[in-house]
Amino acid sequence: MPQYIALLRGINVGGNNTIAMPVLKALFEQEGFSHVKTYINSGNVIFTSDLTSVSELRMRCESFIEQILGLQIIVNIVDAGSFKEALKHSPSWWDTNPASRHNAIFVIPPATADDIIASIGETKPEYEQVSAYGSLIFWSVPIQNFSKTRWSKLVANKAYSSITIRNANTTKKLWAMLDQ
Image (tube, rainbow, N blue to C red; front, side, top):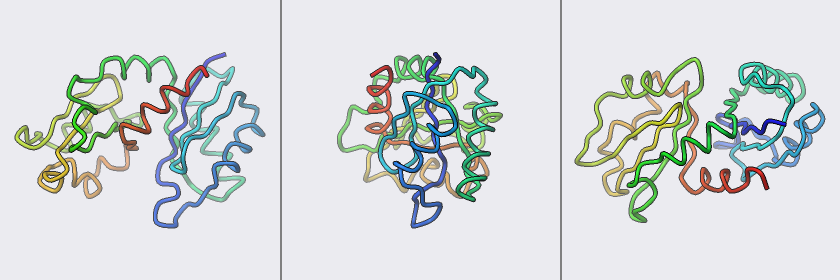
């Protein structure tokens, strides 16, 4: 059965859209998904499903979260194969310098990585590095230069509603949890 990762956008941030992970896990199981695992409180759910349409899975997850919890949450569904393939192609500089911040920016369809990169504008190579593979954008910046980058101002950009961000540690942990 195909394996997926559901990345819930904007939950448990600043006391808003609060969902406990045991509740989220139970909801996914109640909806018929199997091998459900959650990771940390930022809305990461690994599961298997006999459904193969990512868009159908996304609509179904968003619907049951709204119906049961009363929250309108954007859910990005990433199939395990695409996720693993993107991480195998992560740039050599990503998550190598402990004095830098390393993020994985997951693009939510129908947006594309090219759309997001174009919306943010040119990178500042003296401060940051950006690369994309499929619908995953890799971004690294030395912590002391964070505020000097265009990507640090992503929250104010219209593209922000079409992404969800996880740090490198979370992203790599999700990879390790797949197929366990």
